[in-house]
Image (cartoon, rainbow, N blue to C red; front, side, top):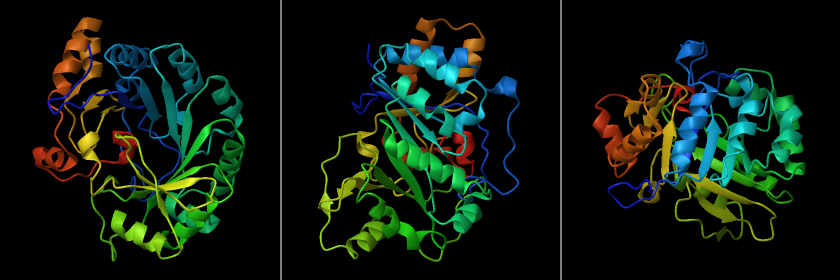
Length: 328
């Protein structure tokens, strides 16, 4: 059996949020005071996460990305990674992190054959980093960046392009790819900050970002990306690394979407922009068998909307959750 939606898209990629908690308070993700975190008993247990991942892998999901909140905030996360590594049906285990807590675990991540790390870093300037994240941890995050770059792990940098904050650093980030084998990814800002879309003087969407970059180089190569890639990828000739743009808000990447999401509380989402389809945590705790779960997943994926605009319209309300709640 293979998870396939009504548009013929094979679902092979799970984004699983480990927790809704985070040690930073990034402006584009949550209010300064933070969000209302749920009680621990409402979070999926590691045992439940392992079971969900195992059942989905038997339906063709071969890639999982572990997100948060910040996954390393949750106690025993490394132990969960060890158990997940025993699932021989998973071809890739990837992690998205803010990097503030992981420098001591990099050797262990290599040992567990974690495929890649997406490191969120929205400024290369200490003061501006503190302004964006509302925390003074730039030194630790940059140390993590250097350690990851020297490791055997594939490294992607995630930069949320924020009008009025870090657009003056876009070229600085592209330049990081000159001598380092890294993938720099610029992400359109989204309204998942716990308050909804903020007012911006300039809208830094995909087109504005790429035109800005092209204006600073004589030549930019367009790379051929995988069909289900979330980014449009480029390279400056003779640079070791690459850069790409994720049109997360303008949503020009939906046609080949092969992803589903499960939040830290077990809400199954066919799309980042939908309101959640059902709570798999409650289904498990009410005694569902693995076959029950498979049937539910197969039926639910059939409801996957064609794109993020339809998913958002179907909600009938403003998109105003925190990305920390959804799973970044």
